[in-house]
Length: 207
Image (cartoon, rainbow, N blue to C red; front, top):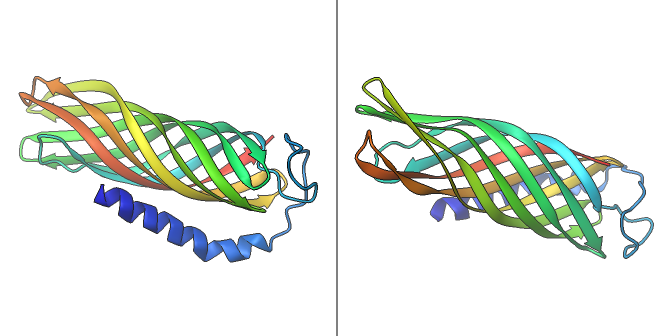
């Protein structure tokens, strides 16, 4: 959980560094999906779709490997807004290059995805939010030419900050902590699972 705290602090710090500039950028207006906000305020409500790039690092239960590597994927969701309060749902799917080798074992996390709730507070075109929900993904183990793969589910928690840059475009910085459940691996003779943090930056198009 120390990784969660450190990653969360890093994400919030990165957000504060650029929030002052983002707040002054012209973003115009678009048709809001809610009536409970001033007409001249930035609207976070409605559907969106985007992509992200980041870096993941973690540990494998009952094994000394510590997979890490770059990740990237797509996300989509829907926001509701009432005044400065924004809440919604988001799903994403990620490909990752996270892997590590120790002695005869190699473990990697080729992909993962999440389905999460989001809730936050908007200061006009700057949105601070927390997020959490279901996680799922693959853990691949290899040793002496043998490989074994398990897909399991788990949970995720995170924080982020998102900036409205143009009427239909926003950018975000986000940290997630992901814990995927253990499953028995024949090649290790143990129950192995993966926990990892991921810091990522992304863009969204709001419809």
